[in-house]
Amino acid sequence: MDEKKARSASAWKYMLAVLAVAVCVGAGWWIGDVVWHGEERFIELSRIRGMPGNRTVSTDPEAIRSRQDNSTFMLVNGVRIPRWQFDNGVWDKIREGKWEKRIPEKEYGKVRKLVAANLRDVELLYQEAVRQGLKVGMAGGELRARIIRRAFPNREEFRLALARAGLTEKQYVELWKKQAAVDRLIREKLEAGVEVTASDIRTYYDEHKQEFSIPGKIRVSRVEMDVPGDGEAAEKEKIKDRMLIIRDRAQGGNLLEVAREYPRARGTDLGWLSEGEAGKEPAAVLFRLKEGQVSPLREKDDKFVLYQCGGIRKNEVPPLKRVKDEVRETLLRENTRAKLDSLLQKLRAEAEVSIPEREGKGDEYSG
Image (cartoon, rainbow, N blue to C red; front, side, top):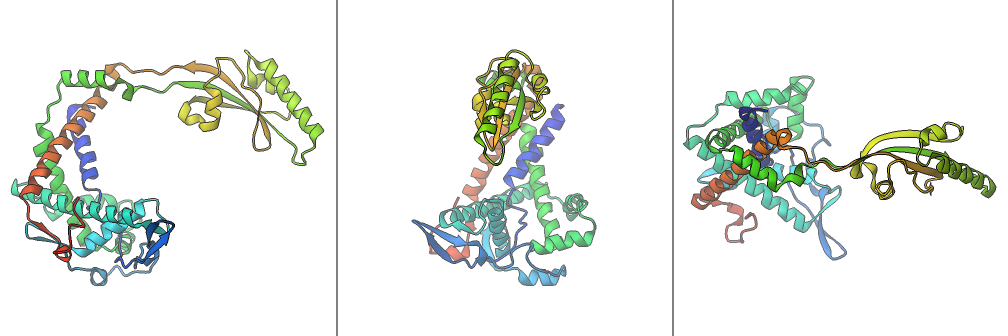
C-alpha cells in the first residue's frame, strides 16, 4: 500500500468511527417503562414505538416526516438538531447491542450520552469544515447515497428501507453530505499534516513487535468412534479397546493411516490450527502434545476421540519489511486521531451548546 492509499484508508476508517452515530438508521420515540430485576433497573424495549422492520410504512416523504418528532433536541452554535435524529441514534445503538427485550437503565443512560455527544461533535466538525471552505454540496451526499443504493434491488426497495428507518431519501443524502464535508476536514486539514518518518515506523515496530506476531499453530488430526446409543457396557469397552490400540500404534506415526484399518473409525485432517482456532477444551490437550504424539483417549458426546499433533509452527514475529505499510497506517490513524481529539476539545470549549429540555435539570447528556 503506497502512502497516498494509506492516508485515504486511514482517514476513511477513522471518519466512520467518529461519525458512527451520525447517520441514524433506527426509528422510534422512547416511552419506556422501568422494571426491576433483582437489584437492577431495566427499561423494556417493547416500549419503543415504531420498531424498525415490524411495520408497514409509506415511502411518501410527507408521511415519513409526519412520524418524526421535529422539536429541537440540541442547539449547537445556534444550529438546531431535531429530536428525531437523537431518537433514531439511540434506537440504532440499542439495536447494535446485546439487548433483546430490555436494557439496563444505566446502559440506556450511557447510550443517550453517547448519541448526544456524537451529534454535537459531528455538527461542530461540520461547522469547522464549512468555516475552512470545505463544504460539500448535495451532489457529494447523493454520490455516497448512490453507492449504498446499489446494494438494493431497486430504488423503491432503498426508499422502503429508509422509511422503515424513519428517514426520507433527502434527509439521508443530507446526512451523507455532512459526513463528506467532515471527511474532507479530516483528510485535507488534519491527516494531510501528519508526517510519518522511517524512524517513526522503526521505533513503533520495535516497541510493538508482539502486536504483529503470527500465532503459533499445530497440524491436527482427529479420529472418532461412536459409542453405542443403548449404552451396553461390553460393546463400549470393545470400542474403547480398539481406540486404545489405534492410539498405541499411531504414536510417532500417522494416526489417520492407522485409523483407516478400522471401519468404524472416522479420521479427519483439521489442518493447521492456532490455540484460538482449536477451541477451548481441545486446545488444553492439543498444545501440550509434541510432534507425532497422540493425545490420551477422550470421551465426549457419545464418542471416543483421539488427536495427533502432526507438526508445530512456533510464534513468528514478521520482519519490519512485511508489516511496514501496516505500521505506517497505524501511525497515521493514531496521529490523526490525536489531532482530531485536540481540535474537538478546542471546538467544544468555544461552542455554545444547549439542550432545551434539560435546562435547569442537570447535565444528563454531557459526555
